[in-house]
Amino acid sequence: MTDTGSIDRPAETSAEAAAAEALSAALAAQGGDLPPDLLVFGEEVPARNRQDWSRQPPVRPLALARPRSTAEVAAVLAACARAGLAVVPQGGLTGLVRGAHPVAGGVALSLERMTGVEEVDVEGATMIVRAGTPLHEVQAAADAAGLFFPLDLGSRGSCSIGGNVSTNAGGNRVIRYGTARDQVLGLEVVLPDGTVVNALNRLVKNNTGYDIKHLFIGAEGTLGVITRLALRLQPKPAALDVALCALPDYASLLSLLSALRARFGPGLTSFEAMWDEYLDTITSTFELRRPFAAPHRFYAIVEISRFGAGEDARLPDALGELMEEGLIEDALIAQTEREAADFWKIREIVGDLRQKAGPLVSYDIGLPAGVTDRFVETSAARVRAQWPDAMHLAYGHLGDNNLHLIVRSPACGTDQPREGFDRAIYDTVREFGGSISAEHGIGTTKRPYLGHTRSPEEIAVMRLVKRALDPDGRMNPGKVLEEEG
Image 1 (cartoon, helix red, strand yellow):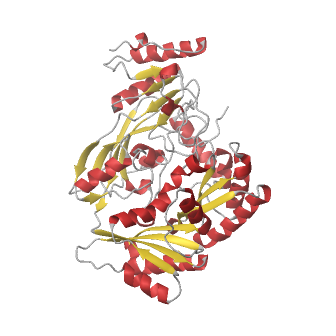
Image 2: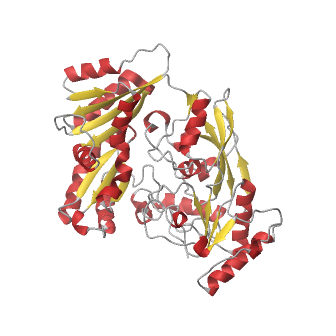
Image 3: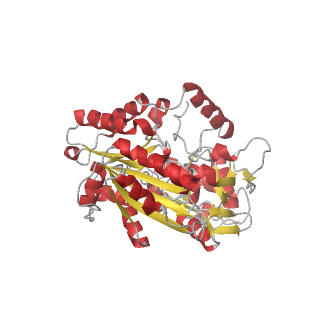
């Protein structure tokens, strides 16, 4: 057994020193062969593990654990349980709601070393993967096997598959394949007391009692730590046809979505809507070439997947007919992968906007498609009634009822009025019968508004589940639900 108690543990206070000693002693008491670099303490915790992409003020945890195996995750959680320490799981740290933000005096548990695809079953179209594996590696492994993993996000190069599942991420192809939840057949999870639950089911049909994986998908690490996943793979498309369409009004945007659904059915794999203020801001801020010479009110990126090797590209004909009907004002069809990537860049480069524009506040909202534009107009009016100079950018996965907003008041500089923006936006979401989170989760930033979307009875059931699996409230405390005390 490695003597973890001999690790140099810089600490600023005697309380921290005592907690660090208790953690090391609890880990050593379990026996077994644990690596000397499993834990680092105090100021040795890297800066990247002190905050997530929400860019809230960093917090230095008591310690950082970087396990390489499920057994090491279990050892850390058991030791933290014995020492009475909070644990915050961390994946790729690309979350926007402070779900992976550490807590002072607690332990950050990073899965960055638990990477790799363990197995691809081509005949069964399944994959076993470790939770810390970046999403793009999962996609690449499926592709190398002649299959397709459809979950896709702009942060694919840095987000982890475990984090995607813990937040039930959505992304660009939900309209066809569903959210992260729909890609998971089974999982392995470590409970807060260190118990390992192996539920790595690989069967599509397995009707044997409670399907416990759903307790942990979307739970944001508040009930346990997902360590391995059994993922469902899909047939690989023979080709992807991508187009950028310009439309005169919101009714035309909805009609285009309906027409493409009717024409292509499940072949419609992406439908990304952009309001004019969004496209104008993105192209000017990043000095991108405007796709159309004339301005338009709405834009949509359309992706059609073709699966048969001899299947004709029917998207040009469909868009031509819709232009003749006056539904579409203009359209560009990508002739190469590079051109398709240029279309998608307009949509995905938004993640870098804060680096150019300065501090901003982003929103991830679920709304019925029929009311989405009225919501955008109403929320923009309410925000600008208080901050007349406010930027209010709207875009999103319209085909699966997901709207994203970016709000910023240039006059407020680095001190953006987040609480004021939140009240204006989330109160409007409630009025329109929407969800305060479509795919990013709750974390702590949306926690005060959970009741806007969930009934008191639903929240009470959530608390029952939390108490059952984490009775001491140590697992990612304060995330999703208010702490009880």
